[in-house]
Image 1 (cartoon, rainbow, N blue to C red):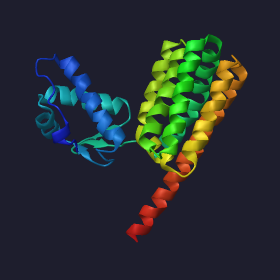
Image 2: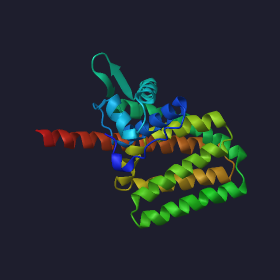
Image 3: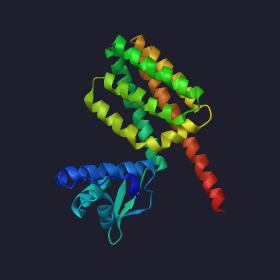
Amino acid sequence: MINESNTPKLAASDNTSSLSSRVFEELEESILSGRIKPGENLIEMKLSSELGVSRTPVREAIRMLEQKGLVQIIPNKGAVVLGISEKDLADIYTIRMYIEGLASRLAAGNITENQIRELSEIVDLQEYYSSKHSTSQIKDLDSRFHEMIYEYSDNRTLQHTLSDLHHMVQRYRQLSFAAEGRADKAIEEHRQILQALACHDQDAAEKLTIQHISNAKDNLLQIIKIHNLQNNDHKE
């Protein structure tokens, strides 16, 4: 469940709608980060106490989580966390491949010299932290690299959609970057995408981005399969 020592009480002066959104964001983050596990029950009274709010915004937040597919409300049992399944991950990455490819295509047509320098600095920093084996820093910079391309696409709907999808797989991306050789490969792919953007080559930018996300998908699903096999071995 939520770690109370790290969870600030939400302001009681906020209106119900605002509180519901903030409770939703807190619970969503806890589910996507793995602090709240699949199969756990979300108990309104307990969450209300932990977050320092009434049960009404908690109830509304749980409904929002249900609409997003992260929980299931079962009669006589309450809200049960579903989390992100292996199929969900595969589906998310498949969607990302094509719409992120589109974002890179659009960005290649819009990008400025200053924006190219900003992206280049991100990749330089990734290479530095790779030499230090700092997976967390590499992951954070990876997020920034992709978010900047979303922004440079100059398509707000595309940007919001991709940011949401990227956020949903944050926990699993840490696993991916921890895999031997994946961080260096991802950084190399970023360099190639950056070069295509700098040349305003829309076809190459799109193609390289699709391949980059496809590689990330294959790597992550392979890691999850190995992880699941190891867990099953421990249970036997």
